[in-house]
Image 1 (cartoon, helix red, strand yellow):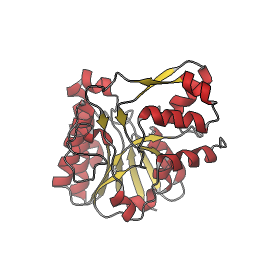
Image 2 (cartoon, one colour; image 1 turned 90 degrees about the vertical axis):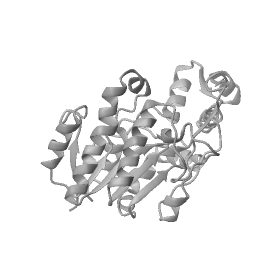
Image 3 (cartoon, one colour; image 1 turned 60 degrees about the vertical axis):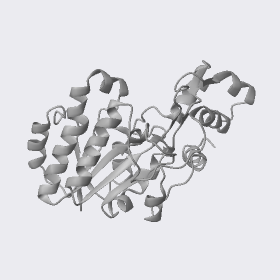
Image 4 (tube, helix red, strand yellow; image 1 turned 135 degrees about the vertical axis):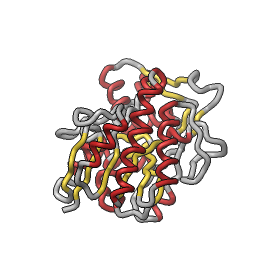
Length: 288
């Protein structure tokens, strides 16, 4: 059985991947309690001692505020340790799968959706840190996958706690009855997380390269939130009351960092639209 060393093993997507593929792979779980990702040299020593066939590197400090407040510390986590892991994989002839982000394109020139080879530019430290590791791997490693994820969404399962996402955020608003504002000047893809977990074997078999993993979405974040509320059965008057437009954030420089997924779909990975993903998720969890 192929042995996959997965970092960030307790995170949402890593937990989901393990749940969906428990009988197919032997997972070696690594989290921050096993190794300090703020110590790249220690990370490199740790990984040199591990036995694995593929490294699925999902550990990161993705909190935007933390990356801005502690750029040096988060650079060690998001960039230097990722490079250290990729270096070990290269030297041992093992495939590294690096999880990157749509945030690499949040200030890119040109029109979205962005393809894999389009120019990257980011206004956030997190995006910049991921860009640096992404570029190093593409330049120095032969056998790699870089998966640039959109904002992923889903709901809780046993042993799997989702990160905040468009669906959980809207459900929270509907349950509390407290209005919340969603961004009018932001467009981004949003993808059902089970698309990744359920297709992990096919993803790991992809030819070496960078791929965008994103279901397509032409709506603003505000319009998307309204759609979610409507699909959950919220009356239009309540949608109007609870789902408010944030017309201030990014008003001076609207953000559109949607990713094109043509390349990965042409390679046989199934992705659709946000609306299709939302309906699939709601059916899976008995909410449709």
